[in-house]
Amino acid sequence: MDELKEIIKNYVINEYLEPDSDPIDYDTPLISGGIVDSFSMVSLKRFLENKYNIQIPDDQATPEAFDSVNKIAELVRKFVKV
Image 1: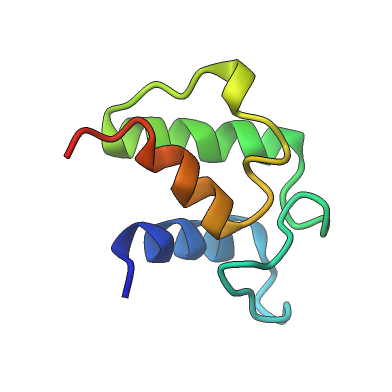
Image 2: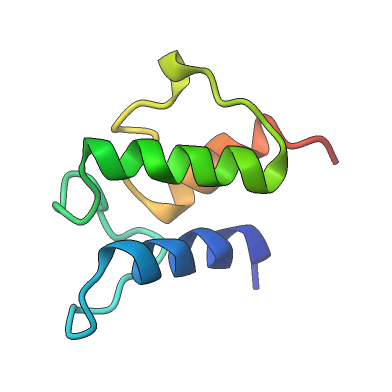
C-alpha cells in the first residue's frame, strides 16, 4: 500500500470528515465534492510541506491539484527528494 496516499487520506478523514461521513478512497473528489474548502486546502498544504520538508508553489497548489488523494500525492511527489 502507498504510505503517502494513506497519510493524506488519514489526514483528510481526521481533520475534515464527521464520524458518520461516508468513507473516502483515493479518487474521492475532495474539493469539488465539498469535503475540503479553500481554507482547509491551505491547512492541508501546510501539513504536507511541514511533514515532507518541501515547498509547494502557490501556483501549483490549485483546487484541481488538491481534488483527490491521488492528485495530491502526485503533486507532493514532484517536490519530495528521494
